[in-house]
Length: 129
Ligand code: C2G
Image 1 (cartoon, rainbow, N blue to C red):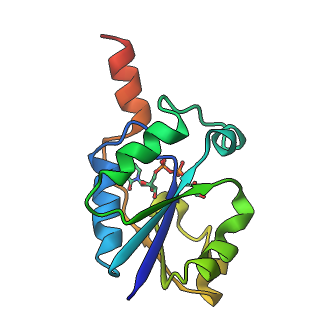
Image 2: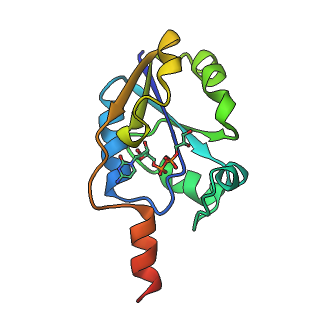
C-alpha cells in the first residue's frame, strides 16, 4: 500500500483543490489530507469561511480522500510522514522547493496549480452578489 500525504486549508472546496487531490491520489493507493485547523490558519494569516469540522466533512466526501487529519503547526510533517508511513508528499507548486527537507523521509512532488481558481476569488465573487 503506497500512502500519499498532502496539506492545506481546503476552504470553499473548488475544482483546483479536487484536481490536486485527484493527481496526488494517482501516486499511491491511499491519500491522507492534513487539514489546517482554524488555529493554524490564524498562524498562516488565513481566515477560512468554513471552520475545521465543516472543511473536514466536505473533504471526507471527496472520492480521492481516504483520511483527514488535523494540521496544527508547521513542524508536524516529519512526524506525520513517520506516523502514517507516507511514501509520497504532494503539494501544489506554489510551494515548490519549500518542503525539499522531507526528501530524506519520502518522495516529494510539487504539482502545477490549477489556473484561475482559488477560494479567495470564489469568496470575493460571492461577496459581491
Ligand atoms: N491548489 C491548486 N490549485 C489552486 C488552488 C490550490 O493546486 N488553484 C493546491 C495548493 O497548491 C495546495 C492545495 O491545493 O497544495 C490546498 O491549497 P490551500 O488550501 O490554499 O493550501 P495552503 O494554504 O497552501 O496550505 O503546510 C502546508 C499548508 O497547510 C498549505
